[in-house]
Length: 116
Figure 1 (cartoon, rainbow, N blue to C red):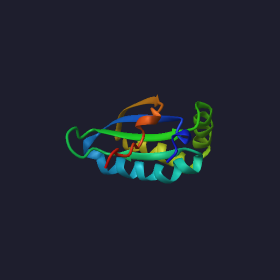
Figure 2 (figure 1 turned 180 degrees about the vertical axis):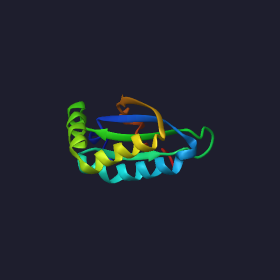
Figure 3 (figure 1 turned 90 degrees about the vertical axis):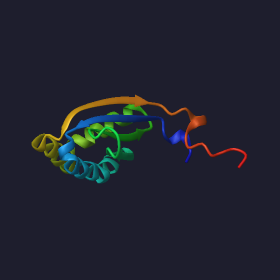
Figure 4 (figure 1 turned 60 degrees about the horizontal axis):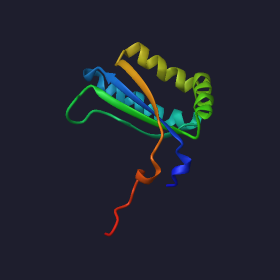
């Protein structure tokens, strides 16, 4: 994959209710359809497996912050997106959410082993 297509990544850290992991999983699966339709390049959602049982992550890439803003507008207009936000509000499985915007260091991204 060429790194020039991954300009910035929105890194979302969720603190979730560990007793509602399966509901969060459904929420994440829903975004798997919605995010690409709204213009985001979904890298994936990551749920707790071992260790901490209440931290999950979502990673979505965009060519620019302007593209991210356009995506956010499309997301607000999306009926499926609205329903997924309502699911989160109704079920209250997300206790907190933090967003960071990161850029990849090209020489480290998906680097192949050398000399093998």
